[in-house]
Length: 225
Image (tube, rainbow, N blue to C red; front, side):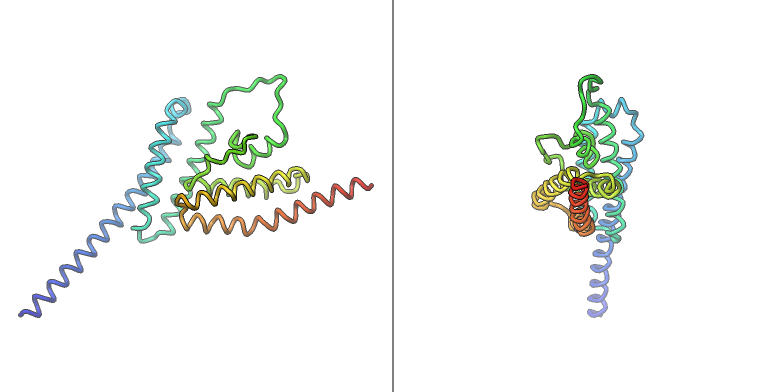
């Protein structure tokens, strides 16, 4: 009789643990869903309303993004959840870049030209993100993976049109971004994002070296002709 009671007690405890675990997983999924739906809702906001209330949108986004990142640890399919977060994060960064570009003051159309160096930086990072001050403080744990993606994919897509000076600038920007990554890692960069960034860098580093050397030798050859 005592043995039956003991076994029953163990079963009840085990059931309780399972139930608790399931509840955490369910709550975590709701948190991630809430984050994804919030980003989708930002995309549906009228441009004028979004620009006028961007500070509030940004604050809510940062809160929900942090909650979603923390919730992944309690989910059964972490990899799939991380993919959803990455997709929503990229979508949000694109919306943010769009609204920031639209709310930027109009530049005079006369006597003002954007240098080729600034045009390159705008393409690699987004309009006005990196200026002469080389300030990368806007790059954080939440967006650094998408920053690397845009930078590397842009360079890859346009590699045949870059001059030697362009590749020198790309190398400078790449090293500056890597330096910012070292800081971001200490601030809580997720292991998943770190792994994805490492894969991007592994592919990009030799391409940067080869194309930069090729552009330099090409200019030297043309100078001798």
